[in-house]
Length: 519
Image (cartoon, rainbow, N blue to C red; front, side, top):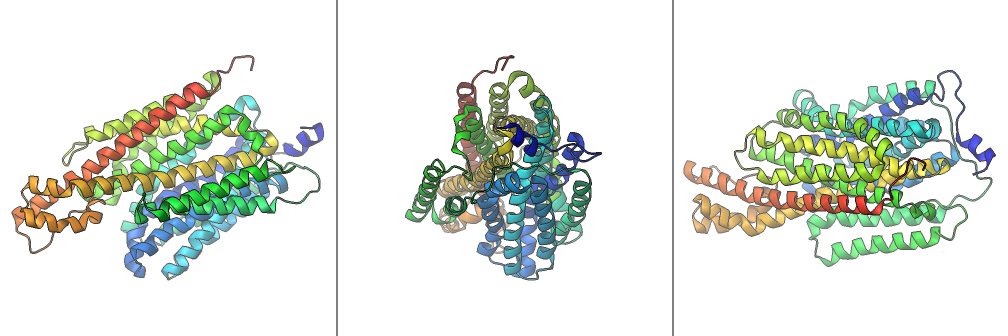
């Protein structure tokens, strides 16, 4: 990078503008809004369906339209910020996300909700990567790790608080309030950011924007994630699922080959020459595969098997949120001292241990059997978020900070989509093979148990297929058998996540070079 480029990439602090810690406070508002929205909607979906008369497929698109739009545009959002102004595109993202949130509450139809959720995803893609890009441009290298730790803490806490906030709003106000809450947060973010953020960009001279790269990347990610989110419905071994995922991967391979030949690519392939950056991207996916997949089935267990209300279920998972608050800055400090080669495996091991601990859950487990795993998940997520952010964005040049932030956020979304889809599919598969046996063992007559196999999709969500015609004793047996079948699936899903975390820990420990004090 030339001296001229350095000056163009780094904002000059004027008054409060461009001051590192003020900038961190400003981007935290936008990051909190997006993180909260990402998990709060899962609580609102049932009420949205009842109020708007939506089918199950339509409700899936309330989530999927947001996820697809977000994942497809994250790297583009970072690139736009790097070239034309990170502050500018962050503010556009915050404003657009806020307006789209209000529009969802006012839509009045499921089609409107789906369209504006997609708009939320697009504006979120402008917002998220530029938060890290802004921090990379204003913090000196020796303080960037701690800034990332606080960034990771905000992201983790907002995601974990979603079910609690969503439960309170849905239960005591209405489902629209889940989206209206973004309005005051967004307005506050715009006011603070306008006052304290300085503009930063990377000037590369006059050249054509990489439009073919944008199209190829968006198409590849759209097709890949569409295949992932539909895998549960189509079946993971079906030709449709395998063909769609393979098609997405093929487009992404073409994108990589095309980008390697461009003078000014959308995603510079040279970034992947850094083992820490590459492995950090992989670990980010595993991190959110475990977190979001685990939260999904934990909430099903707490609400449908144990019978807790959404608010109570959210409160019971509070140790996850609180431990991530502690782990994020702690992980940043450990990464500063020992490097991501130490912190990433440690976080993965904590998440793996937490997942293995969830294999002990039973139909009547006390809270003592749950909270250690919740704490382990929170500690692991916070540490990995800090270490992987440092590994990805910290190892990228300042001029590519927005793109690196977009890469991290994209891997996060892909991991989260895979986690919820794959782990729920594993639960559904185990329920299908064990439901009849568990029902008969619990005392349900064999002919009735055979007939109840048709309700395996409900059982995979933790719902017992009882009816008013059943006697009390049969109803109790059905509840017991269905709960045991569901937990068979949960144990297999937890084992899968735990093993994947151990593999991630091994990859991080062996693949990232040891950093010497001189380096």
